[in-house]
Image 1 (cartoon, one colour):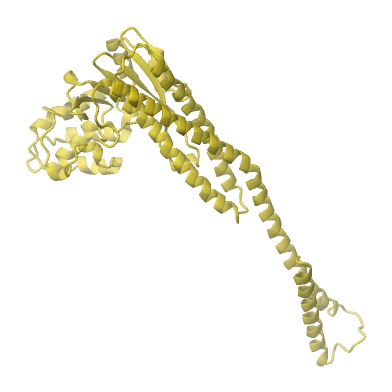
Image 2 (cartoon, rainbow, N blue to C red):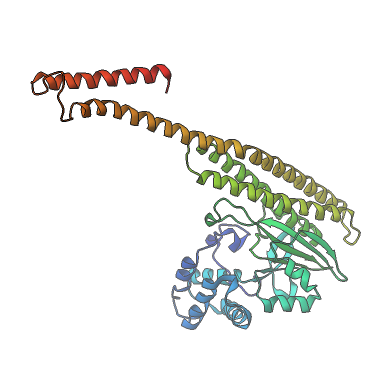
Length: 404
């Protein structure tokens, strides 16, 4: 951040203007390892600072809230300028400050860059605590219900016009977790557009400094449109993933006798219902933005809004088609699993009968009764073996002839 963060060596960023966001988000263990590296001269790396930083990383956005979290962030920010230690520790502390739950940005040469609080045009609150929410409501005179809707996964997307700002509640897909078992979920985020400021409320971090998605931004209205477009793009990427997963599951079901693949497909069907509802509500918001009069868009911004509306319509159509295909094929795929099971049971029954026939022959000559032949003679054993082989060959012939 200008004026507060130290100048880091260029090899840490390799020329990327995205700074810390271009670096892969480290795991808590990795962050702890970075924060516990000692400085070359010990300045700015007191044990209290390191021990205070580690719990903030461990608890994440939901922990260390309120005055304690603010004190930790402010302490880390003050120490950044005074540090004379190794670049690794500077980089670690840069990350710790960067991953705080309130972030400030501004527009610069068509890009989003980090900024000081006093000059910030964009404020993003990532999974804030109740204290931060109350502060932002009081400072910017925002509606409490609308703010809470930004974190409500059940809330539909909508557009609200207030006295001093316009509030947009938009839907976005959640990042997939392996524990979700092929169920893709939905979350919400809020965009509050003021005259000279935009406030973003989200339960997860958004890559605002990603130049591939946020570029050529000439105004705050354009930035808000880019943010909505990013959500639509995220839905499209998830739909491609769902389509590929569906193809792989379909290939598994051809030979599978297990129910788990069917349960995975049920999860995909359930996910598409969520996606269909969310994308449709987003479509209504985009339509209202096109027809609204409270936000004045330039011609370029209107063209962007039209492109976003078309892309979201295509995403909605793709979701409907994929949902219909999955729903119509579920019964057929369940029948395939049942048929595979029946085929396996049939094969087992044939093998069981095939074993029982020679067993019956041998058992018959094992009974304690008199037989027409002399069972005590040496040649009687070979007669029994011959009968077993003959009966087995006869059974195999009938099996092949009748295609059992």
